[in-house]
Image: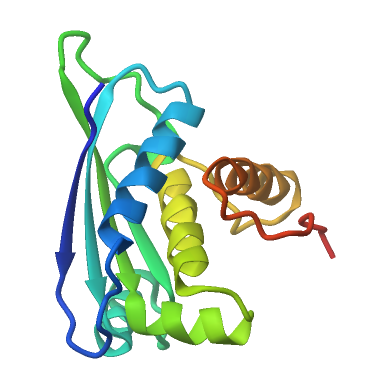
Length: 165
């Protein structure tokens, strides 16, 4: 299977470190593999700044602040029943990451930018597969466990277990 990950750096505030594009592709591939998805996928990833992600967050979620990542899945709630059986590659959706926010969060949580971008990418990919943490409870715990499983496989583990407060 050959997944296609299109990456666009549409911001000028942060010099994106070398290896970031490869990391983004590795995260995408790891989630697809971990989900045992029987198709190749196509995902678009755009790196933007806080100002641009704030606009998108307002437009799509009515939240007036910059967030770290937004996912725009093409399949509602991970329902892939309508995929034609003869399709070669499934377009999953779009991911937008504020690389500026990723830098802020890496500093705040005292880990590398690579770890933060990896986490945001895995998190966003799981949203494209229909996972949701917004309601909390077991759905959130399940999503966090999936995130940690993939991050551990990629060598980007948090170093501690997710605990529901």
